[in-house]
Image (tube, rainbow, N blue to C red; front, side, top):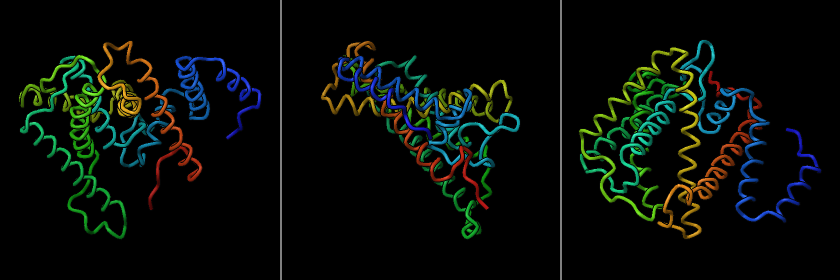
Length: 280
């Protein structure tokens, strides 16, 4: 990769001395975003590929396709991040600022989803490696990877949402994020609908869903790192509204994008390609 020009370094250093911390935070975000955008593959899907490249093996045979083009993350990760985005979006619209964990029956279902994800992932791993392929339990398939990934993703969203609310908001609602097993069932029906749309591999539908799944990586990391920033600076439960949360969110986004950029760089230096891993 090309080095940053010395003039650019001088401008950045000069601005760092003059700008207050809020403007410095915005400048940092713009610099990191600009560098990442400049060195990653071109196009909207190319940027989404670069996000997926940081967190997913992107094995072609284990991914869905837009025609001949592989989507940014594999089938399992597609389900995982689409499920998380679905549950976060649902809770944001229907249960804003709730901080209560779901009842035990709901937690039990989510634990089963996590176990199914782990079992299917382990089975797929055994099937992938020639020396271990004879030990796999059943023939792995992308639809099952998608379903188990979606189940885990729903659980991730349902657990992250109340934790985030409990960390940042001054005023929050202590009721459970899901009212009961019926509401979980509704969320699962919506998730199955999303999975059905993915399995159709209709380019008009799969294209936006592919972008949403890649965006899910950024959203989840940003929320987690925002919580970390709030706790590190001892600002828990001080945010009255989204305006108060703007700069902590921006800091979380900076850390998230930095992590993605570093992982992209390391993997690219090791492999020399933006494509997925290849086996046998």
